[in-house]
Structures are given as C-alpha cells and as structure tokens.
Length: 72
Image (tube, rainbow, N blue to C red):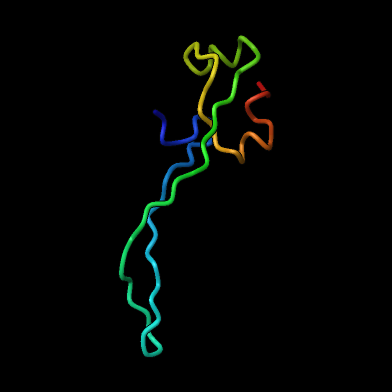
C-alpha cells in the first residue's frame, strides 16, 4: 500500500503538539499526519506506461482536484 502520492510525492509528516505551560510551550508528544490518498484511474495508455503499466494509482486529493492524473 502506498504511503506517498505517485505524482507529486507528498507523504506523511511528523508534528509536535504544543502544551502551554506558564507562558512557555513544551513539545510533549509527536504524531504523524498522513496525506489523503485516494485511488485514481489512468485513462490514457501514455500515463499507464509512465507509471509502470498500472491502470490505477494512489494520488493525493490535491492532485486529483487539479486533474493531474488526467494530463499527459
């Protein structure tokens, strides 16, 4: 299962949570934020050849909204 977008390469990031304490903040815990990956079909044969013959790939919703999976 893919953890990063096949088109733009966006993946997960690790972020720290802030806890305000006496006017200062201390990084207490870290959490991993994942991108919103969805299955998208590749309509043209040129795109399939570019992505290793796959008819569907996992892409982020930002690329899906921009229509990057439909362009050559």
